[in-house]
Amino acid sequence: MAAASIAGVALLVLTGCGSSEGARDGGSSTAASDSGCATQTTVGADSASLLPIAPAAVTLDQPGTAPPATLTGTPDRTSAQRVSLRVVSSSTTLRQGEQPSTASQDVTLPLTARVACSDPTDVELQLGRATSPDSGLTGSLAAVDGSRAGIAVAAGSVPVSLRILPAQAADDAARSAVEQTLLTALQRSVAVPTQPVGVGARWHAVRTLDGAATVTQTTTATLRQRTGSRVVLDVAIDEVPVDSTFTVPGRGDRLTIGSYSFSGQGAITVDLGRGLPVAGTLSLTGGRTLIGDDPARPLVQQTSLAVTWR
Image (cartoon, rainbow, N blue to C red; front, side, top):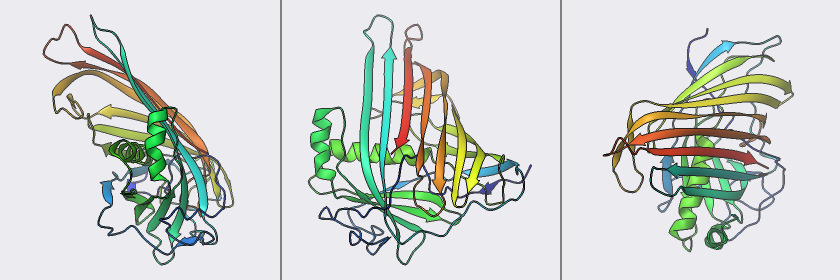
């Protein structure tokens, strides 16, 4: 087993069909619509929200068959990449003597990605017209159309932070939905080893995610196919809490985790010259038992998450 290394993500979350069309200007463009690289940047923008992304430590378990090659590529600056990210999350809470309650969010967010013309560690994003089955949220999201965001990339193509620069007209609901959609997808990005690998290679990546519960996320990936700069990866993810503390979002109340599970799988196709993947999906499901002042009446939650790019 090779020593752990900080790996490249191919920047690459789970995605669907990508194309090489230019983005609309939208009143807040990162570059001309026909440009393949970003001439403007969100780095250092005064009103940008800066969100850290936990890096992943990668261990190569099986190098695969010959001929091996590194999973890296030269950024494609000849044309912009357009993708559409959809993130669907749901949580149903059950408690003895109370009616079940469900909270969910379903957002589809068109994105245009460009690597900065002068900085390969800067991937700039332009947001399109986001939608949701929730008509009220869709109305709020209309103000986000044309907003900008960016991803800072460390050595080895590891995303280390997300910058979001929403339009001034965007309300709190729209800002929160965009932030959750992008951050949730990036937190399930697939890190790759820096060592040369061949078909059949298998590795696992470990990162710590902070949230209501701090969890250790283990992603296991297998290189199924490689054709030129395109690779297909089979992916499995498992998340387990690091301790028994659960902090209720927005309230600060602390509960004790009695049980916890959250895992799933998917497959992605990555073009190593692009800032985002070109095909794939990921689905996770789980549950948790949370104990408060009355151990006889715990909260039982069933959770799910689906990330798709098209």
